[in-house]
Length: 444
Image (cartoon, rainbow, N blue to C red):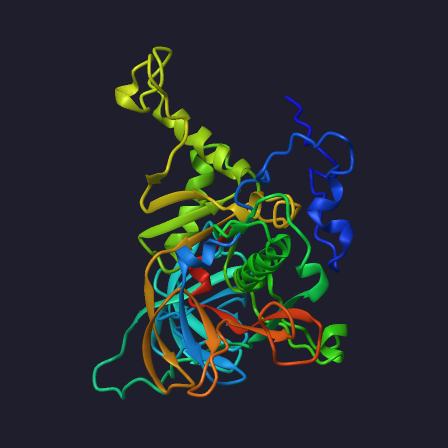
C-alpha cells in the first residue's frame, strides 16, 4: 500500500512568518467588499489537532533548580574486575592498565575455550598466570580477543596478605545549561484591527483578537523547544564552529544515550529481537520496569511480534476488547508486555510529527528505565536520590530562570517604553541530566 501525504512536503505549509503584516491577518483573505457577504464560518478549523510535541519529559522526568555554570555528578563503576580484548604469549597475558593482582584467580576465555588460572606476577600492562588444569594454559585458547575476569584468590599457608589495594574509580559526569529565548511582537495599529474569525490555541485561548493567536503559538512553540532542545541538544566540541563562536551547547538525551548507553539497530521482526535487547539490559542496570517511547512504525513492529506470539491459530486472535466478541471490537495493539522485564509501550508524538523528529532523526524509539538512582552530587557535596532523567533549571533567591515571560512596549496594556508595539519575551536556562545512561536503549 502506498500512502501519499496531502499538500507540499507532508502538508507542512502554511508556516509562521517572521513578521506580523496585514497579509497574515485572517480577515484580509475574506471577501467583505462584494454586494453579498460571504457565508463565513465563525471559528477557525483545527485541522491538525493538538500540534504541540512536548510531553515526553513531563512523563519521564522531574525538574529541580541549580545555580552554577556546570552540573556534575558521580556514577558508580563496575564492582568486579574484568578486561576484554587481551592477548597472550604462552602464559603471559597483555592488557593495558589491567586491574589484576598477584594471587587472584581468573578465568581466561576466548568465546569458545577457557581455562582457570592463578596470577603469579604483574606489571602495568601484563600479568603472568599458572593454569589449574595443566602445566600451561589450554593450548586451544586463542592468542587474541581474550576476556579475563577475576573470581577469587588463593594463598599458601603462613604467607603475607594481598599486595596492593584497589580504589573505586571516579566516574564524574557533567553537562552545561543553555539559554533559550523567543519573542513575539505586534504594533499598536495592527492590534486595533477588527477580527472576524474566532481563533483558538491548544491551551484553550480563544477570541476574535487575531494577534493573540500568533502570541500563543509563539508561546507554545517556545514550550516545545524547552523539551526538544533537551532531547536533541549536542555539546560543541573543541575546534567546532559553534565553540569558536562562543557557544557550548548541551548534552541532550539522544547524545547521552548514543555515547554512554545502548543502541539497537534494525527492525523488531520476532521474539529473538526483543530477547537481544533484554540480554543487553541484563548486562547493565537490570531495571525491572521500562517504558518504550516509539514512533508509529516501531510500535507496529512490536505489536506484530506480540500478536504472533498471542495467536492461537486460525480460529482467531486471543486478545481484544469486550471478551473478544466478534460483534464488538478487536484490540490490535498492546500497551505492554513482560519478558523477564516489564515493558510499557507508548507512542511518542515527537517522532511522528512531520515538522519535528518525524522528518528523519534516525531514531525510532527509546527504552527508558522507570525509577530513581542514588548519586553523589559534586556540587551539593552529598548523596541525592534522583530520577534517571531530570531537568535542571537555573534559580537563585533573586532570579528564577525556569520559564520567564515579560511584556515590553507601549501597546496592548504595556506602558514601559515609547515603542508603539507590544513585545512578549520568553527565556529559560536549563540542562538535562541523564543518570545511568547505560540503562537506556535507542531503537534505530
